[in-house]
Length: 449
Image 1 (cartoon, rainbow, N blue to C red):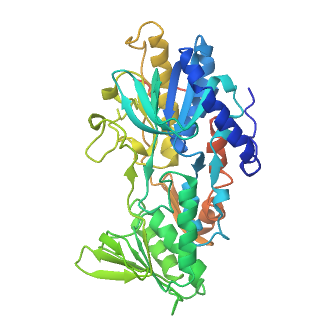
Image 2: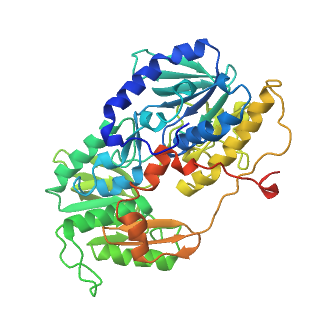
Image 3: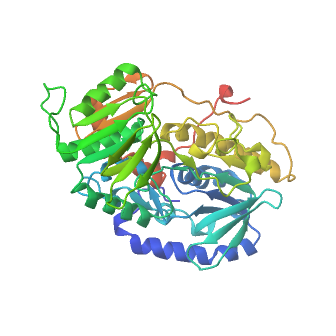
């Protein structure tokens, strides 16, 4: 099996389309052979990682491995490395979408085509009794199709309120939203960004430096900016996961590119006006009209297609916080990534969770070779979140703040790690290609219980 570097995604669009179509055409054939289907719903950070880890490390270790077939289901043909979208909001010249969209089909060309299928489709329901997924097909034109599963990983992630900042359905939707924003930026004199987390801070910082430039290093604030940019933190400070001194430094960097930060106010609702402006209704009773409004606060889990019984009050999948199984969905069902109730979010958390969930899946699949409801022998592997202070936030093209595993990072280090290219040439590549998972995680006695 070749685990080497995959083809450049920009040079393989035609191969991508061929792979999608060919794999879709053999889907019904694979099902007719009664393969043991491992279904992974979601082709983003967690879903891609789970598929790569299974194909590299779990599948080769299973008895009768040729009986298993991995099905990766996603409504988009492309993996969006959405961290980079905050720079793309400001200008296509600074960050083109071709730099952070990667064809999902290309990620798996390195594997035996008989072992997997990429299903370009939208999952619309799951039946935990019959253990089937129903989806609307995106390639063949079929209205709907069912796929049975022996093991199921739900990794459908979350979406942002703004269509510029995450996939709502397809890459084209993101492209269209960004192009429209770029047109409006040419004439905008006021911009309102709602949200004091990393997405809001990065978006405001990128817009500020692109539109207003940056003041001299010895000045604390940019005077008379070309575009008035306001960031509503919605709380007592921005970047709530970082210590107050780091958040204060972030505010200083924002002020240097003409961004005013206002605390303690949230947007309750907003309406688009006939003249192209937007009026935001604030929770203090005021109304604020702006040329461009960018909602960057909070996310919604992509779980509308799942039974309500599997979801908590916020719409996230009720996940066993140590085994990462979805216990109420029956045997061999797992949740990974932001869609699960267990996680505090982030790529590093996915890196910690994937090996645990897949190792437990391996144990469950081995037990199922004896009987459908057999209990695995030995101990489960346990997920233990790393809750140390970790967040890296560029502010414009040359500054930034952050911490890693509790250590505060200098601005230059933030720029080097993330601010240069938003990790499109590092983390994005290792997730898409699977190179992050070249080695299987090793376990010791303290990892199990």
